[in-house]
Image (tube, rainbow, N blue to C red; front, side):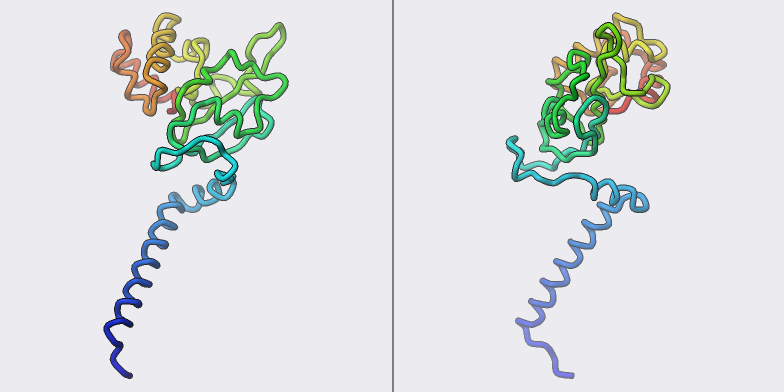
Length: 196
């Protein structure tokens, strides 16, 4: 077999590096046994039709649920707000109670945006979900939802929402240790009941 020339070695090396990068990206996307792959397949990627400009950073992936026209998992640019996620999900449903969430909060990767439904008398009813069903979204939780967590009363819940609003959202539950009135025991309760 003839020995490859110097230019052939460079071409083969370039192809090998490109294949390694594609493979590494596929492995990273696959995550835990294909669960991320299934989620990635359901994420609409119509960023050409989306008006927000990305800062060149990675996108965030959020789950939009509740009183929206097209609930689902969506990819949005870093810096997007809850209102952008609601619009990406087709906009609010007729029975949406938009006053029940902070539409100006910044989105965090992996966050769930739960848009509450208007219940009898105009009260919030979370589309078939109760506080015991799972973690509450830190980016869109109302004061009333935060009060359902052990150790969180109305004053602390209001401080959490105020802190979130002042800092443009929260990307981690650990950031709440900056809120006065939240000690180590409360932080453990928050980690169990909240998601970014």
